[in-house]
Image (cartoon, rainbow, N blue to C red; front, side, top):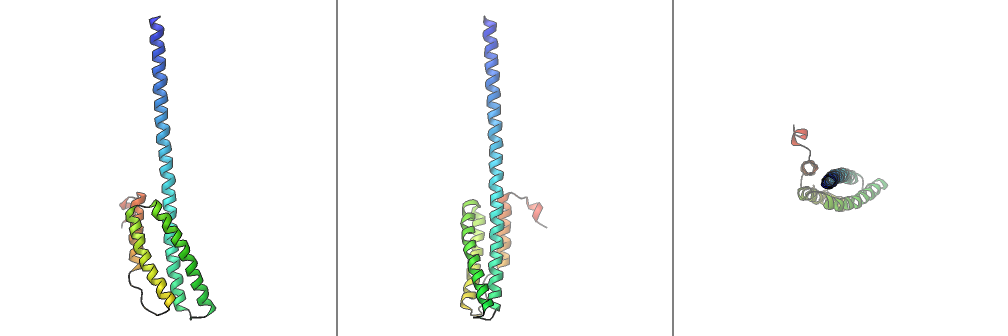
Length: 156
């Protein structure tokens, strides 16, 4: 009778241990999957935001070069406005997903980009203050840090 109880206790302990080990492994697998999913979403957001900023800047430059009042000028202006709406939505997504340092870098980009858009709207020929390229480089660096890309992979 005692041997049966000892055997039964051993089987119960083995089953409980197996259950706990399997549960912990499954939980760790799920957490890795969720982390990967969010990192992929972050990467997509970082890329979309950067692409949209470049599109706005490029379109604004073309609009400033086009003759005011022409159809080409109007088309560039409308494209710039549409891209600005997309950038605004993408920035909100960035605020939800990105690190505080990456959000700060993106906000600095926004400030210079808005100056460029104002100069385009006013068509006053005033030079844009701030270096958008340097700010975008800082944004890219913060995005890479947030995504956990080792510095050795992107520093030269």
